[in-house]
Length: 110
Image (cartoon, rainbow, N blue to C red):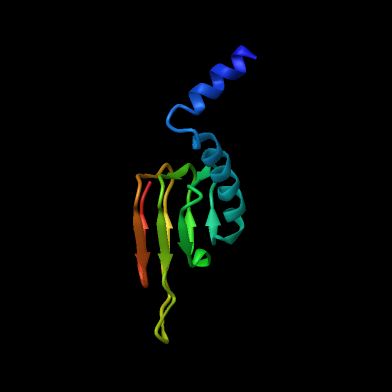
């Protein structure tokens, strides 16, 4: 029991809801996997992320993002049609409150 408590304290060091948010975010990341054009392994986003146009977004291996990530591939804006393409390479980490949007192309390399 002492080892479990030590582990719990390490995971839960920042706030009482940290453990819940971590587990919820892992589950949310797993559920989001099927919606992307391509998605590598070790993908982690926070449950409060907002991602639109996943079918136009490719993300490489080992992607992680802080809270409030917003990625948007805009294919329609007031009736005007676009062909967006967002490609994010391997080993990319984003901090909190990052917004990536495109109605054409955005490429973030490894």
